[in-house]
Length: 337
Image (cartoon, helix red, strand yellow):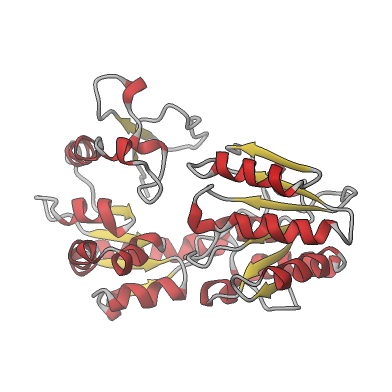
């Protein structure tokens, strides 16, 4: 298979060390002014979103420069909508990651566009069973829709040879309100009254300054905000426990990577997290919004190294990228006819 990746020009993204071409398209005359591609559409401020028409127009025109047997877009909106209007009628596979299927329930005006993209697609792939059900409710055709987990490179994401002390809780995500990182900060304050523990927070976003101020007001000890993380395997090797309080994940890639790295996972009890974690076996699940329960689960995870061992076994068996990419190759063949 010959693969070409089309992606926006970026001021912050490092070059991909991959054996296939990555074509980065401009969407404004000056790269220093290009802002909309530096964040996801969900958390981009209004000042960035004014560039969206130029961004989409450039993406559409660059996608027509060459002919392909198949176009694989990520997210039903906006890229899936663009691919649905390819004048060549090129077969299309769209991967739904979660936010594209969840946003129409919050903003009804998006539903027609998402429905159009899903119905026009020759194949729809969801990153979790939860997202597949959302896509079906939005109009995806059942016979053309399946779940393929993104998967993790279990060679890159491996447990460290030796864990450090004191135990460290890690959070790696976009710093936006939907991630509910404040709940983890509150739980850590309770936890630090009982045990010696550190908190390592990686990720950037509009909510980051507020979270830093909140951690300072809580008086959290041993808490570090690293900002954007470029080396996720190294980050997870520094942690013993991975925590996420979000209730709107499609299927958290960060959680899968942490589990592959041998971290005991503590996550909000949602349908998508239950696809990854069996409570008490390879992680702990807590009632969403229950800070005391979250704090207890963090303490339990710290005292149960076997959870991290089992977590890696789960990822190797079910979420290994070497297994899942073959499912994509089959889906490509079926979509391209």
